[in-house]
Length: 579
Image 1 (cartoon, rainbow, N blue to C red):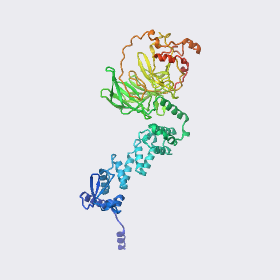
Image 2 (image 1 turned 45 degrees about the vertical axis):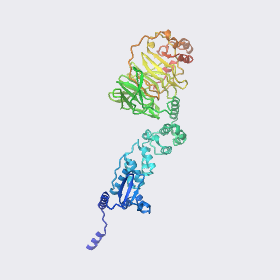
Image 3 (image 1 turned 135 degrees about the horizontal axis):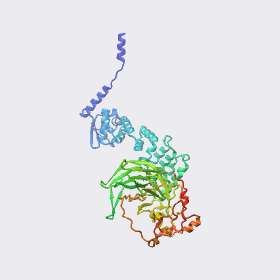
Image 4 (image 1 turned 120 degrees about the horizontal axis):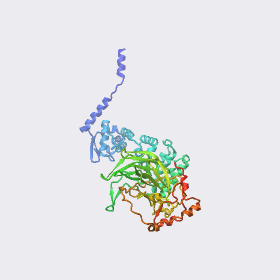
């Protein structure tokens, strides 16, 4: 019986990992000491003395190289092509030790070389490393790389990651670098984590608009995965109308957004280039506060930003400060009561109505109210503690002539007499109790070279009421509108994709006496107010405002163009509901 027990004990196999590790350690010592090495591998300019048996046992690639009757099997020096010497050294260390050093700066070359040498364990370890490094900003690059090397495990992982984090992924730069087939594959997936189908449509359009000249031929294929029956018709219509308007205004052209900044010296009368923005952008807002220049929001390649940069003229450097609560382009920006206000604009896929305020001391943006009318690419300026917004484009894609004032303390909006010409992408400035509306664009007249002036002094005193021209509105104002970045006191930004040229706020001297009416008469048109009031059955006053409209067209062509337009229907503005 005792012998049976001993026999059973002898027959039971025992194993230990220590023996295998010991053998591997000893073989590696022999390699380092160049003992029993029977072949040299030439990799680039470096030579590695190794053992055929060890390499053939570790890799099917080397097994075929040394045992399949190839000419390399009898050579003393074998050349290995397509691998860098440093990468090969790491892989050789793995063969002899089972340890591999993987880092962000070598993982791509390492996985390619390991795949070529058929070191499957290294490939798997590299894949696990990449899975741990993945995020919404680099997952597209890893997806494309895994597809290129046919690493199916990593490919499946990155695809699933893209589906789950689609909303974050589609806002990154790498998303726009997808090939057409890769994009279609992602958009067709049933696993996309989205809030509604409109987000898939926006992602497809964003990819097309990145390089419209080359990608427009794919529009049918790229939009085919979008399930249009699930799209809200009104949102799709707004996108089409808004896109058309921006295209007509030259805002979706092939022009590139710029990061360069220029400064104009009013004393020496010349422009100089200063430090560039960190983020190239157009459609941004610019303001001056506390001796600093702030660049706010904007867009590039249809990607809208919420970031804010601050330029210090002393250090001549841009720094990043707090971002807005919403990404915006075509916003209105001005300074009021020691804070920066950002109003309206294009907010994501919608036209924004919210107002944000930036406190430079707390480095914080907060939402403080809403606009009376949503609009974008409008004019904006501050005067005596009030914020004025002018023109812009409505959410119906119509250029506006409307004029409104916002009180930041009471948070109330009030309508004011509109301009005589509809204007979007206009420049606005406040000077000597007047607001100037400069240039701009509308679909009827294209780019505008006319200027209009709104005089508070003449409105308040009425001393020239009988001689002020009536500058009527071309059409009744629409019910909803959206906004544009233009101005703040002393430093306004005209809507353009050209060079951003912010300037320091200038202090104006006391207003000098204006020219006589006789001198101004060739520039102004006498309005036939009494005749127009009789024709429209109106009295001398409309909702508490003087019957005259204090917008003056500056320039002879303005008077001629506006003479044929119908008079302002002021009660229609008074009845508009404010959201």
